[in-house]
Length: 93
Image (cartoon, rainbow, N blue to C red; front, side, top):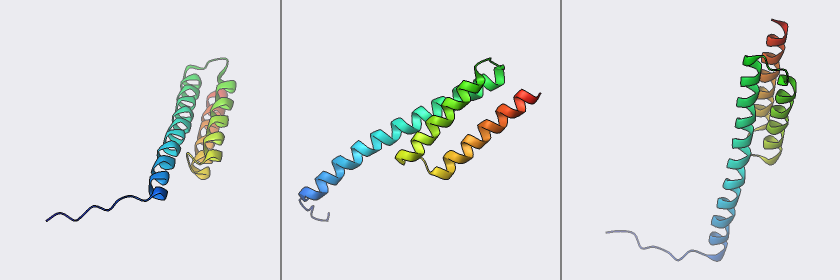
């Protein structure tokens, strides 16, 4: 026999709406950061002239995503460091 379903409270319904909205915002932030990182990696690999600007844009996107809570601040810092290290390595070589 299935358990009886309870009617959801107003506060529960509000939390469901809030969670859906916040999930959409977080997804957008994560996605834009990921896209910026991908573009930076591509610019570094191809040795593009605007690689420095692209790396800066990626770092900015990661910082924004971390500020909004879309990704953890340490994860953002780690990714920024890895991109900067890759850019420095490519510049050196």
